[in-house]
Each structure stands twice: as C-alpha cells, then as structure tokens.
Amino acid sequence: MNFLDLMTQGGLVSQLVAALLLAMSVASWVVILWKVWLLRRAVGDVARSTAAFWQSAS
Image (spheres, rainbow, N blue to C red):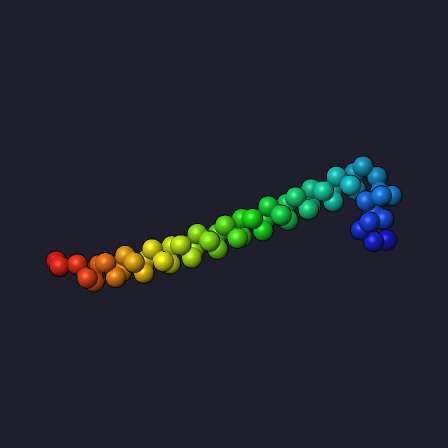
C-alpha cells in the first residue's frame, strides 16, 4: 500500500495521523533552518565583535 492508497482508502484516523506527521515534519525543518540561520548570524556577530575588540584603543 503506497501513500496515495493510504490517503484515499484509509480511515479518518490514519489520514489525521498522516497529516499531523507531515505538519510536524515541516515544523521541525522550519526550526532546524531557523537555528542554522541564527547560528550563522551569531558567528558573524562574534567575528565582528572580536575584530572591534582587538582594534579598540584601550
């Protein structure tokens, strides 16, 4: 039984579970990509802060 058969011939519970799993998977990927973006931004901020620290007069 493939996914299309499951969606067309499955009951309400199996369709809701599949939809919930898909929604949670998408949400997980959104969180993963958001964290990657934040981490890259933080690395850039650290590099700029370190450069500013070493170039300061006092």
